[in-house]
Structure formats: C-alpha cells, structure tokens
Image (cartoon, rainbow, N blue to C red):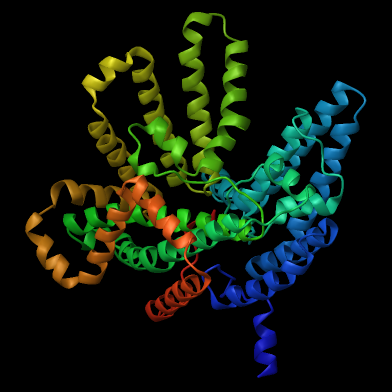
Length: 495
C-alpha cells in the first residue's frame, strides 16, 4: 500500500497530472493549507510556490523540468546583462542573443522533426528523424521569456531582483502548462508587494474553478468524444453528423481551453494573485478582428505587442509611399503574425493553414473596415449577420485545425455541403440523446446574456461556505460518475 502511494508521487508518462484529477485536488489542498501560513512572508512564499510549481511541472513532463530550469537560469542572467549593459550596441546584441536562444530552444524541441521532414522532401529522405518529444508548455513559457527580455530591453520593467522571483513568474503552476501567457509586469509587482488575500478574490476564484471544472469535465468531455469519433473517419458519416462535429468542436475547444483558463485564474485568485481574463465571449463577435480581441486574449495581445506592432513599424519606416502604407503595413504584419500564430500551435501544415486563412480573413475584414464608414457598415452588414458570418468562418477554420489531415478536412466539409439531410436529425437525437442535450445546453450557456452570467457568478460567490462545499462535492461526484475512462487532457496541453 505504501509503495502504491509513493508511486503516485513519481512522474508517470501515461498519467500526467491534470487540474481535473483527484491527485491534483489532493496535493493542492495540502499545498493551500501550508500556503495559508506562509503567504504573508514574501521570501518563504516565493520559494514555497516555486518548489510546488516545479514539482507540478515534473508530474506533467518528467525530466523536462531540467529544460525549464535551464530556461529560467539563462533568461534571468541575460535580462540582468541587458539591464546593466553600458552601451546600446551591447544591450541590443545581448537582447538578440537572448531571443535567439529561446527561439532555437523552442524550434529544436518542437519543430526539429518537422524541419527534417521538409528537408527530406528536397533531399529524398537522406536525413533521419530525431526521437524527440517536446516538453509540455514550452510554447507558453518560451513566449513569456521572450516578452520578459523584450520588456527589460525596452526598459518597460526592471529585471527580477532574485532568481527565485523570476522562477516564480515563469513556473507559476496555474499557467505553466497551458497559459494564460502572463506578462512579468502583471505578476512580479504583485509578488513583490505585501500580499493581501481578499474574500472577494477567494469567492471569485472558487466560482471560476467550479465553472472551469463544469466546462471541461462535463460538457467538453462528452462533446469531445463525439468529435473524436467523427474526425477519426469523416468519410464514414453523413453530412449532418459532420456538421454537428464541426459545431461540436467549435464548442469543445472553447469550453476546454476557457475552462482551463478559468481554473488557472481561479487557483491564482485563491492564492491572492489576479490574472487577466483570457476569454470574453468570443463567439459573440461581430467580425474577425473583434474575435481575436476576445479569443485567447493573452496570446492575441502578445502577438500584437511583440510581433504585429513591431512588424507594422518596420514596414512603415521602410515604405516610400506613406499614403497607402498604413493598410499595406497592416496586411503585411497580419499575414506574418497569423502565419506564426498557426505555426506556434504545432509542427504541422494544417496549423499553418489555419493561421493563414485567419490572416486572410483579418485582411479582408480590415480592408472592409478601412474603406467603409460606420453608418454604411451597419446597413451592409448588420450586427446579427456579422456575428453569423464570423461564427461560420471560425467554425469552418476549426475543421482544418481539428481534422487529422487536409484530406479528412476536405472530406468532412464536402460531406456537409453535398451529403446533408435534415431528416437524420431526429434519429440522431434518439441515438445520441445525452450528447444532444449537453450540446444544446452548452450552446445556450455560451450565448446567454452577460448579465445572467454575472448574476450566477454573484449567487455562487456570495453563497455561504457550506453551500460552496456542497456545490464542490456535487461537481466532483458528477466528474467521477461520468468519467468512466481516464480523464482526457486539456486540448492546449499539446501546444
């Protein structure tokens, strides 16, 4: 029995730790009990959270925790050198060196086999692939490291005084695996100040954790199973089933990722740290530009501040015709930014294609906004029509994101367009009644008015402690009952 408990503490490749797992809930309960005694002392709190975060990362990635530690040490030193450099040339050289180190590290672990595969197309297979599994979360903490070095170079922030402070920022367990991508300017000042855990922060944190567990553990869990079935062999299913899979994945990826973000932000809130929201009802957007202001906000703002705006500035600075350069610079910067956004999600042409078509969509949308006045736009494309067009575009794009290959994506879309029969709707409901109910309820929840969501949050947050305990126990019991198989990892773990 003792060895069994001990084995749970060791990394298991087949069972990485998840926020929805019983083991995490157990160790987090123990963690928060000790945290309640040390959080007022900054030095103890920082070291304690760093050690727990590193253990949490070890439980997800095993020996790759060494890569994380290496990244922390290297970037901490580079930031200090940038800060104390006595010449602009040395400061710039060190900054570029630091950015390249991070990009090369990410490229090696995540994209080396993708690069080799493409070289082999040219060289007829003369290079062997390297057996590398990239560390979970490397895309997220690499982007955080790049933003940290950039902000230090721009003198927007001072580098962390101690390596433990920087380690706290990079490895903070609520977001180390799948975001949000947090800026050092948001978290480091909170950790350096006297930490006050307010009741409203704890109440809101509890609500977000419960909401995230419901999104991921109940709705996303069931919907994803159906999507996996259809996208496993789309040619074997009708147009109606492929359409529901397309809409189902649109719902699934939002519930899964926003659910993770809710839990991450909630955990941080309970500990006294305030993280910014990562989603803001993105499927209610009236156009694609608005969608990217509401979807994965931490990534979209990162891309805007550290890629899109510098590219725009670069284009304008080197342009001869300033009159037409504003729109051209937007197109140039948008296409490169969205290409990289697609590639960031994984070493696959389907992700690059997904990012590229979003870039084209944003370009068309921006051009339309550029050449039309607000009053005319409201007549040409009313808000409701704009929302339908945007949701349709986003949903179709998700097919290429989710499908196992381009062939499967086109087969699925072809089936939707040419093999659709509404007569199958009721038989489908009869055969998959639980899925259908959860799917319909999830859509209602996603598109419900904001004031209703706020009212629910208020009722849950302001409820007595014993009511919160009952709610949490009920949610856990539901999770245990419906998850007959091993818990499915969050979608964005793979990115």
